[in-house]
Length: 485
Image (cartoon, rainbow, N blue to C red; front, side):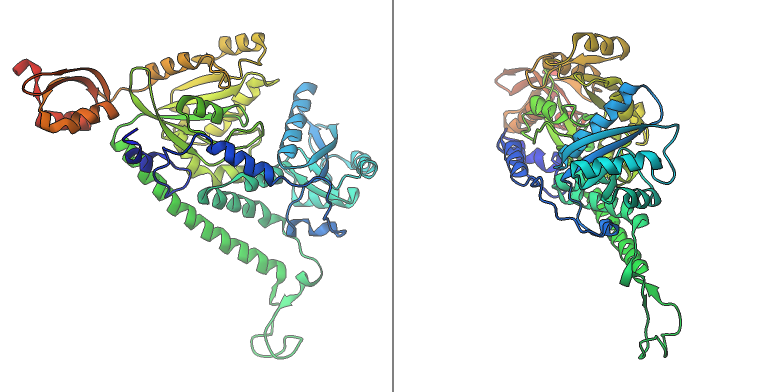
């Protein structure tokens, strides 16, 4: 651990400028979890306005909700699993789910998403249950949102807005907050509404009617002014994210310069990626049984059983129909996956449909340049609570599969052995006589490479190790091969 401060400046990326975070206490995630639970939304306190047309201009508050989905393809079990996932998303956002409805259609209705008859049935359910929010399992157009609200008389949001709200709650780092805000504004821009005074024209001139120099013309409506301000804010956020990306790339370049292999943990949300990172490295990051519990990427160093150093990066979780606004906004974060030498694809073995999780994650990875060409290890997590039949099916269908339990530690040794075998080797084996005055080279060999043997002689230390090219070049300049002694 003597070299922790040297490495932490390069590897930790939760904050672009954070340094020396390797020696954080192991209970950091537990403190984060306590803070999050202390700030949970209070269920049942309704603060909604009667004018439901103002929904885009108010803070999103989910309290008592009714879920509705459209079943267009697949089996009934697939539709139910999708609605169950929506329920978990809603609960993660702090709401109380009262009811769930599924409409069987060939395609969503262009007017009200679920059709006029089902919309009226939904309105009756909302009235009986006393719900104040309807969540649709899909991305609705602005017209669909407005017309469905006119029928049910309460606020209507879609799956995309729900996920964006969860991201806004859980983002902690400066980069994460900027990325979420950019995604929210990108979603909000085409859904702005104008009413009352917002339709008035902003004009110049002395007279109220806009007569005079600079006042002849239609002017700018309030909604146009809002759109212009949103575009200006989005441009500023893009510049800020670009600057943060530069800092991330600088850290990544320093790791590449040291030729340290990189492993990225990717997978479906709540599959246990952070738990696996804690188990492998003792990182102590937040762990919670909730969707999108951790968003900010965390990179830690680890060692293989034979002592080889590599970095392990925990990335944002994926979900079916992940909003494209989030994929674009988090592109700089997802680049950690594209630049990795090995991907640990974590899947929840206890999930009712783990195959769909694998497909959803690979669909997002296909949007990341070069990610599909990187070697992949499928890590089936939660083996302690999974069905053995499902585990057998997954291991039979997927190549390079390792079954583990991050909670109990089962299978972790096998996983580390597979990582050791799959990682590219940049090191070279040396056997050299190092002078005693260059003990720093021996220390570097222990910290950066794999020491196979050390023997002390009268003339110096005979070092038998595997070292990276940079250290090998330094040893060649200073040490002597043992054969020539």
